[in-house]
Length: 273
Image 1 (cartoon, rainbow, N blue to C red):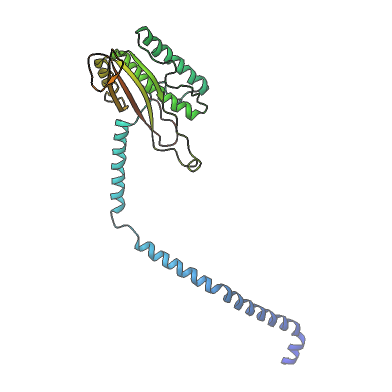
Image 2 (image 1 turned 90 degrees about the vertical axis):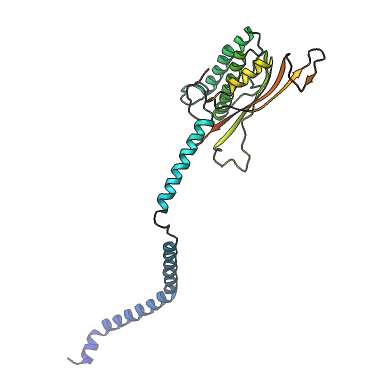
C-alpha cells in the first residue's frame, strides 16, 4: 500500500490529528506568554523572602534568653500585683453571684447601712446614708461591680474612722465609672483602673492619725493620695493651717487600683467587712 492509498483511506483522521497538534501548539504559546513571566516573578519573590527569613533568624540561645526574661518580668508583675493591686473584700464583687446583680447590689447597700451607718450613729459618729453613691443608680453589671468596689473602700475607711473615734465622715463621694468615648469603645479594658473615694473627716488629731494608720496598714491594698489636715478655730469657725488640740478637718482621697487582665471583674478574696 503506497502513501496515496493511506492518504485516501485515512485523510479525515490525519487532518484531525494535524489540527489538534496545531491547536495545542497555539495554546501552549498563549499560556506561556501570559503566565510564564508571572510565575518567574513569584519564584523570584519567594526566593528573596526565604533569604531574608534566613538572615533574620535569631542567634543561637536568643530564644531561651528572651523566655527567661519574660518569666522574670511575669514574676515581678505578680509581686507588684500582690503588693499594690486592690482585691475586694468578701461580698463586694459580683463574681460568683448567681442571683440578680441589681438585687444583690441593693442588698449590699442595705447591709452597709446596718453595719456602718447605724452603729456609727450609736457612737455619735456621722456617716452619710448615701455612702458616697449620691444620686447614682448603676444600671449595668460593670457599673454595679465598680460601685461595689467603691463601697468596699468606703466601708473600710468608715470602719477605720469608727475604731479611731472620729466625729464625722461626711461628705463621701465615690468617683464615677469612666465611660469610653466613641474613639475607644472598641479598645480593651485598661489593665489598671484607679477608683478614687473622696471624703471629709472631722475629729481630734489623735483620732485622725489613728484612722490614717489603719487605712494604710500593710496588705490593705489602698493608697492614700491626699490627706490635707487643717485646724478649726472654735470661736470664729475659721480654718487655720496648723494643728491644735481642738477638732481638725481632713480632706482625704483614697485610691484603689483595680486590676483587670481579661476585661472581667477581679475575683473576690476574703477581707474584713
